[in-house]
Image (cartoon, rainbow, N blue to C red; front, side):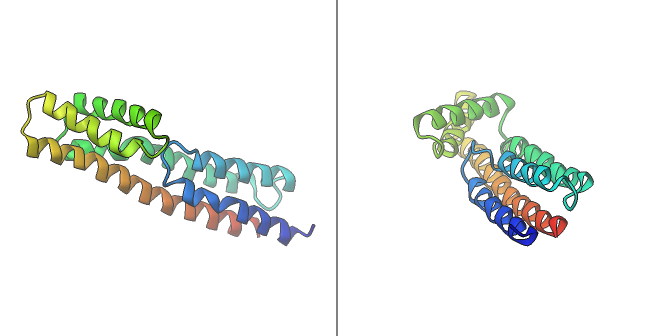
Length: 160
């Protein structure tokens, strides 16, 4: 197998991660990093150097920060109390158990909404907080798509 064919093969193997970003709890960036590590090991980190791999690992780290903070920041910007954010996390987990993995988004929304209503907030304020959590999570997904595309583009550039 020629080197160019190997780069094309691994580049194609990276593409499903872009779709994986949209499904909560699927390890899109772990997948990307693993494929890049396997390529690097096969190549002996000759073309994809350890410094290049560190840049890709940095993108992986940023994606983790985005995953963990986007929904929380959205909820807080929407006015949710920390207790409601915890309810949202619990709701996302329960939603995941009921309808894996798509139940995460409605579970998050319902959890924040219930937390806010339980705190005796008005219905419009509770809806604003729950919507903020949902919008934050969806914004995080969009950012992660951009990060996944950047990861794949840099992988191909570094490997050639």
